[in-house]
Length: 136
Image 1 (cartoon, rainbow, N blue to C red):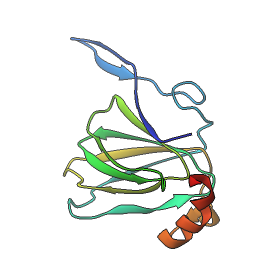
Image 2 (image 1 turned 135 degrees about the horizontal axis):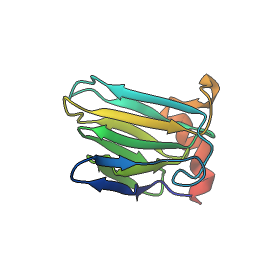
Image 3 (image 1 turned 90 degrees about the horizontal axis):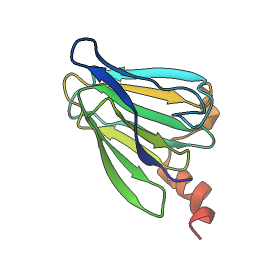
């Protein structure tokens, strides 16, 4: 699979505001095992800088905005997350970095696996070695 942007359905009316729902295996195509969020990141700070062996993630900027760079050795891309109804489905084989955080950015991350340090690939050279066969 390839990382991609997806729309989250919004239910709204002028009096009660808006409501968006995200459920495991429906809007997010995996069981959600971990939820975390990034906030207070400075504009010139880069977060991430890794890939995974197995963890899939869904990223949603529920407030403010940030950019995400993606590199799966077949394509390099940059996406902007700037609306709470847009979700980036991030596959394990994408080296990713988040940056250009707005002052009010809250980046919500839904993960398919519990935290395991062994699941992280922190070296870009190691990432290239692990995923180079998928490019061929």
